Length: 276
Length: 178
Image (cartoon, rainbow over the protein chains, first blue to last red):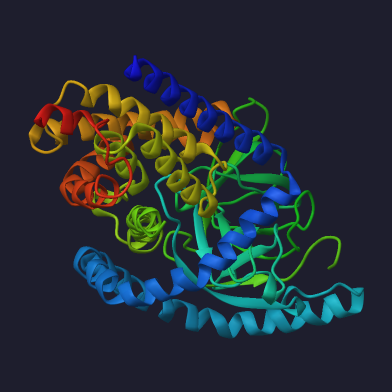
């Protein structure tokens, strides 16, 4: 008899806990303000502990990365040295073009991308858990003026956007996320590029009209339209053309200039469409 | 009163250590390309050795703490860990030991089921991204890591729970040993 009563009490407790979890899920789904505030507050309170422990564990995690990532890092360093040499030559030609662009923008009253304030942030780590494949955490937050939706760049190229932000941490949704969308200019045509899950490229799936001049190697920048990002942030270059899934026009594959899978430091562009 | 607090302090300490390891150390270190799911592992061992009611409550609270720092829906890991702690009880009824190959095998199976269940539940509440990209492969690797870490976590949970909460005659493990 006692065991029957006990079994009933256990099921009652299970039902209560399951209902509580379902209630939290529902409230979270609806974006209830106090719940989100409580979540932000809890993460802010936990932040000093996480930073402290990350410092304590750093020798071990560095050793781990040194053991398992050594070969990859060595190859990457060689590739980067070659790229730097190419870039040094191109820089001279670019300086002249940049001066001309700046003058033109001044004449037309357009803000230059370089005039937007930026906050440099260190990438803290990957996100805890196994279900945040296209997210990283950075060690800056609302205290530095960061807000959800802001563009995140690395080496001046777009690598993501701010998804959630606490006082001193923020999560960045990488440009490779299948849920990431950004307005771009392909030639003179406005289009939406989306992440594909591939760490090296994004795609314009909605057809680019056949009459639009598009060539492999053509630079791609943000359009400033149909998205929250300011215009003229470099994204990458056209890497391939194909048939659109809709059967109308062409699809475009864009090879990313930034490396969203290998971030150490990023810049957050302090621009929102409302505030500028 | 002091014994009551001491008991809860023990299980709280175990939960805090596992939680902090999950969100700091295992956010960087990914054996087999994945991180173990220590809250899930806690739920499995708590369901094995602790008082059923207290084990479910502890699993719920640890899952909820985990939910707070993640991008996934709040309450999803709390739900998963609670159900796992309850479900493990059914397995434990037929076991006479919480260690050994059989226990590790069941830890593997339940861990994999827990991860897949979490992803499917997330899909139900609108997070279809959780089931994209090889969730079965992910679940198997996480389950393998959890099984490897199982002996350590089992000891910690047994220290925190059976000498802390749930000391009565309700544990089937202790019942079998009598």
